[in-house]
Image 1: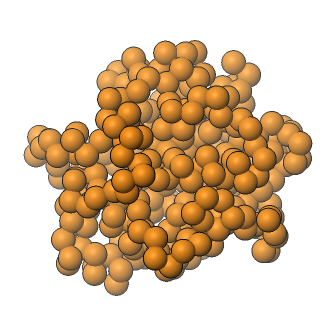
Image 2 (image 1 turned 135 degrees about the vertical axis):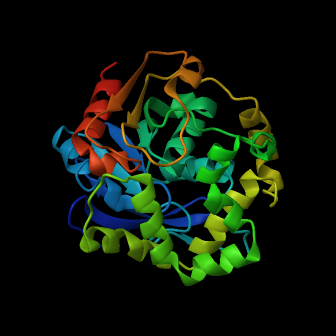
Image 3 (image 1 turned 120 degrees about the vertical axis):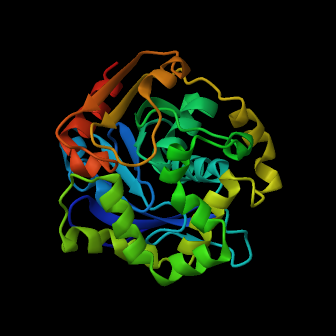
Length: 307
C-alpha cells in the first residue's frame, strides 16, 4: 500500500510503502506513467541531495523516485528483530523490493556514495531492471576480502572514520555526535562547497532514524570483515566479490574537488562494457555532486537514458 505522508517542498509528495523488509519513505515527482528514474543518496546525506535534480527530471516527463535508504529518514524495518544490516547486497535488494512495490519494471538508477554502489550492484546483477546508470565516483562494488587488504598510509588516513567505527568508542561517539560528525564529513568531503545551516539541518534530521547508527556502524564494520552479513545474501556477495562488469549504458561522474576517498577513473573504466563515458565536473565540486552540481547530474541522467 502506498500512502502520502506529507509534502516534500522540492521533490514532491513524501510517501511510505512496504517493500521487502522495510516500510520505505520516498519522495516522488513527475507523471506516474513517465519513464522511471530512482535517485539514491549516500552517507551522511539524504534525499535532499536531489532537491534541485528531481524537478528538472520531472519537468522532462520522468517519474522520479527518491527513497530514504535503510536507517535514514522515515524508512523503517517492518520487524523489530531483524538484523540492522548495512552490507552492500542488502541495500541493493532494498532497491529491487522498492521497484517491485511501486510497479516499476525498469528504471534509470543514479546515485553517489552508498547510493552509487547500490545502483551499480543492481545494474550488475539485475540488468533487466536497469535502463541506465549514473554513478558518482564510478565503480564502487567491493568485498570483505578487498576490505581486509591494507592501503598505503595516506590512503588509510582518508578512511579514519571507518576505523573509528570499528571500535565501541566510535559507535558511542557517532551516536552522541551524529550532527557534528556529519557536518565534519560534509566539510572534508566537499571542501569548496559553502552550505548554510538550513541546508545541513534539512538533511541532518534524517539521522534521527532509530536504526541509523546501527546501520552505519554495521556497514563499515562489514566492509572490514568485523561484522557478519546475513546468510541469505552470501551468494550475492560471492558474485560481487568477483567484480562483475556492468553492461547497461553508464555515465560516471567525479567532482574536481572531491575530498572523500575515491578511485581514479582509469582504474574502473574497464568495468563498464556497454555504452560508457566519464565526466569530471569542474568548479570546486565535491563529494555530494548532485547537490553541488545538480544541472550536471540531471543532464547525465537525461543523456544516459537517451543512449
